[in-house]
Image (cartoon, rainbow, N blue to C red; front, side, top):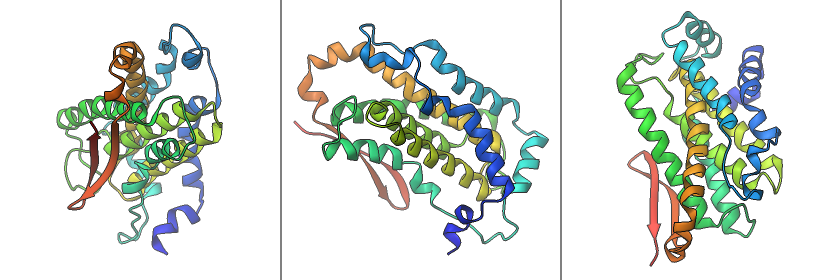
Amino acid sequence: MKSLKPFLILNKNIFLFYIFIINFSIPLTAQKTESDSLYHSKCNTIGIKSFIIPVALISFGAININSQFNVNVQNKIVPKDPNSKCHLDNYLQYTPAVLALGLNAVGIKGKHSLGQTALIYAMANIISNSIVYPAKHFTHEMRPDGSDDFSFPSGHTTEAFVSAELLRMEFKEVSPWYGISGYLMAFSTGYLRMYNNKHWISDVTAGAGIGIASTKLAYLIYNKWSPKLKSKKHLVHNIILLPSYQNKQPGFCLINRF
């Protein structure tokens, strides 16, 4: 079962990677701050302090582009057998968002309706994609496997943390375990991008920061414009965003039911 190998072998390098990322990100899933209580406040805003961690992650990644640190970490994580690959990262990146939408669809209510959550998710992806793809073309960092020079930042990891933060924000009041499970899937996605020799640790770290920040910005924008959106309730509640997979390319299908 080669696909399960990276999860079954919990060696020192895997442990150190998770500790490194968790030290930066765990406050997002375990600590409640005053700014996180936006749904219980009249001002309905997210405080600037909630962006400190994602900005720190992005900064760390940017500083370490083309660094020896990247090489040292990569040498410890990439398996010696070049045929030892695990492609779960292609699916894990979307799983937290699918859970957020799916739980709502089956009656486990989060902070927003299914249509509203889908709209926020779409906004977060627009924000993250507008950052990731220009950054890839601007930095031209070579991937560890030499396949192309669009390594920084990691798009898979960005999407994974967009999804994880969406799940956390929607269901943190229901149970903190939803957020924790989402972040574990996001961490796994980032690790697998390095394990598969597709990204450096700087790419993954920056992608995590971009993903978290993009979702937070999407909530800020939605909260600002939600009064206007509520006046067009029929549009908001009839929007459904579903993952799609065609011609070996993952994507999204936006359905607007009139």
